[in-house]
Image 1 (spheres, rainbow, N blue to C red):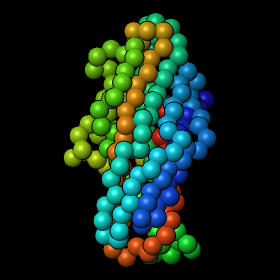
Image 2 (image 1 turned 180 degrees about the vertical axis):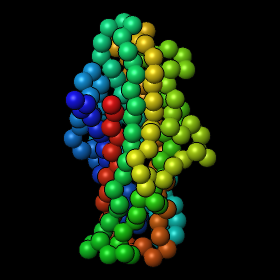
Image 3 (image 1 turned 45 degrees about the horizontal axis):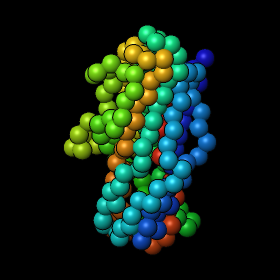
Length: 175
């Protein structure tokens, strides 16, 4: 049986501001994932793009020196909506892009054991489907390992978006 550990953000986008909160977490045995509880992401107007870092995401493994440190973290999103959720009150997942970027911190992992899903900003992917955020393959050099990154999200606001507080969820999980 495979269990997943997830960390996600619920976004509130007021075409004047964007904020983030973290829902409950769950994971595969021996793995943990953590994410910030809240982040202010900025503001935007219809037709613009809001770009912000979500805050540090960390995957940790428990275990012994020389144990497997192999895992894959994925990311997904829901649509963002406000009001009644009509077409002008909805921002679809095809307008939400994700860039994992390089690791910001590693502990106990062999060099080049981990690769980002989107190493360069130009490789950012829309969250119209579940994407790989990071993948590690190797053996731990310490009793426990960890890898952190600070992903960037870009939300392209439709020209027809109405003013309001938009909510949605971006979830990271690890197996």
